[in-house]
Length: 296
Length: 296
Image 1 (tube, rainbow over the protein chains, first blue to last red):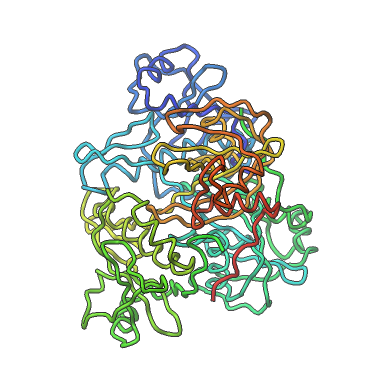
Image 2: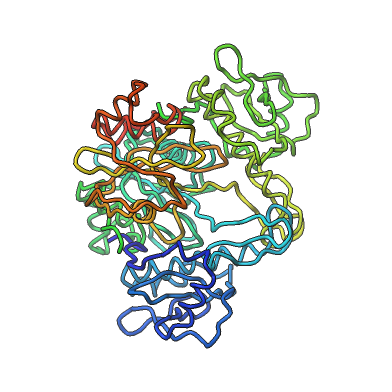
């Protein structure tokens, strides 16, 4: 299972524009509210999210409607977010969570982060207010509607004669290498973004770009699109403004990293990162990954 | 070739943060400026974009740096945009253009549209100014940096016993049916978005979602992610707030539509739309599509 996927909640998006229905769901004794410490998840001893009852007559503008399960509604609180808190501060908790639990928390975290950066209207500068049960903001002046941002990012391996290219960013933990990545820009396809990023960051030319899998990433709201490509040559020209290092790693090297060998050439990315799934798919020769079962 | 892909310009993104380099490129007699009528492309008799020389000492804040070819820079003017002009008003021109020309114009059009909606800072409400050679805006007050938005959208076919599901939106031309589509939301993978959209819009359950191809779509700035899935059943429950109609179409029906038969069950989507490429890949049994060659 790929990290941050597999949530089994029905998003019931048709209810988002129905404040009366949301109010009724929030007033039900079956409604539940996600417990957060700041924006971090609160977990029980088995790594499951903790939920509480909603307060009586909650302010609906301070709630995000996450969805339904068996007719009962799940909400997240629209809390302030500390934008300076680094993503890795919460990784230890994410490692304790099942992917479908992380998916639910990640949805809330992405929405909270988006609200935190969108208190004003990009179109006219006036204040905005939440609407659509937390899935949008509306301008109080020009009435422009704004929707949560999802930024597509390509994350990719290049293969050359049985080795794959991995890179290291300065902020990574000691020894960690991972797949190269970059934002998809306006005016390019996924395949073109992969080729451009490899050319920019590593100076290599690739062909035969294949999609492997995807993952939502809640820091703050990316769609990670994992691909594999073939490199024409293994000579690297590293862009040191983006990467601290890059290197070709053999199959044996990746296997050693996954085993956690002390002699492995790098520290593997954590299981909840799609780079982990991508490397495993490459090792197993099983890409593209079988997609998760549809929800509900 | 998939519409709006195949641009051969080097984006040279490393130059965007170097105003002196951009000024030097703009001062060169080899620099060229995209000719636009409003935001529509101006075309020569062969459907190619028209370019003009840059004015002497141009205001760099009114230019978007599109990239380099052979050391010469291409720019687009950062013009106002009529947000109410419907996308289909320019489709006749796009049909005349080669995909790589449409890709270049589409890049400019997406950036112009984004600037037009982002004159103010979503974080604090103050005015923003272009930076990064047109590839971003910076807040004059809180210094927040904002980057062009690319919204991932899934566009997809469901297959059931040799037939595919097509839908019709009210604003389509008479007779037109196309692949269903919807925005990827925070907290879901591509595969999950496909399953959710089929459930919401057509009431069907799908499995085995496969990625086929992708396309940038400049109205105003989507990344279209084309997929094929298998439907468990062909009973439909259409969401008439999203679709005017949906129907299953046989292989013979799709072939007739592509031939332009008067008796075809629907009017095919235009060649520059990825729905066209997706249907053709399904007909030819060739999905996933071979990706375009990497640029440069």
